[in-house]
Length: 491
Image 1 (spheres, rainbow, N blue to C red):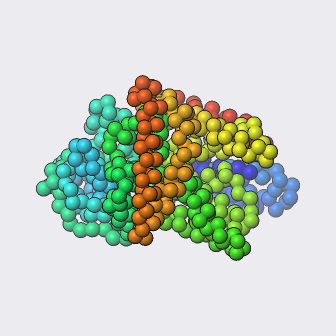
Image 2: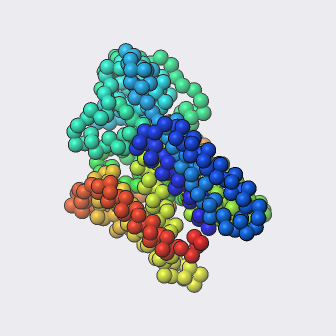
Image 3: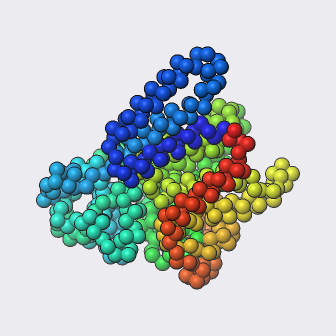
């Protein structure tokens, strides 16, 4: 059942990884695509005889693998960011035109992420004290202030370099405010949604809830973690709850459930399909407003497939939806493959699909409540087992309290998020209910204190970075286990 989208997705990912590692040219991918199409035509012509068609059926896997392998090679090479030497023919200009994508307030000042014009999407991360910049501004900066990330030989620099390259960040620098010149502003749908998000965040901040609660709501609902202080982030990280602060499939799933609950009256009129279409539209608008993070897009695609399956009255297999979501994301942005958030999201969801229902010993028909409780425990353990290697590789730490923290606090999160969504929706309509705001304040205080108590500071955090070969071996073991437990379905 999973074979259809699985082969194209895997071969596309392999092609992207090979091209990024070998820095191959696009025409290598073109050659593979041509070979794949030629093989397909040969198989098609030879399959006119029913016996030959049956005998050659397995070769369809070969040509589809070669086709998407070639697409991956081509896709990565055409979207590969260029360094300044290649982009400008070996002669660096004195200044660069850049588009501001992110502005974060840090303890050392403002951190600005920009896309450098003429470099096929290469980015630079700049530290500066400038205050008036916002996403969408077009600025001019001196080239001399930028340095290649490869020149950073510090331990921290070497550790974060893979993640920065995965995000397309090739340069860093410190630039004093008077050296940054604003020369214009970008326009388009993307910045319309950015402006809309900023308006919603300001509405939340102007409400009567406490400022720490407002910053927390902006993080978990709007994907903006700039207001969270370093101590709060560290507390959630030590408690194994850092994923709560990042928009993910969990948040999209909770929002989808909330939307279906709100649209439940449509079922009484027999027009339940309208509710699913409405939920799909709202989820994608929400993903756009919150910045189209990879995990959110993946969750939205999977939810869209699931809802369309219900509308069309067709069965939907979650594994197919996950592979299709990954395929679409990688086709649009091949460098998503190297993003830590994308990898964690896909690995956790894939592991849950492969193992969760198979390992739950409770019959959901006879004991639905016990099935839910057992499923929550098993899902948390599976997500922990699947993701700890990647967490260790990217963040050099393994929080030992991940399991108890998630078991105790995750069941509360859907309730809190649903109340928060309702509260923010009313705020945007000009209505503020103080008792809901007070409930959110007390809920956040309880959540933060619980995480602090469970994490016990750094006492239960192991500082360890898994080597890349260790990550590969663990992923192979997970894949082997998934195949072994689901081999009947895969045939």
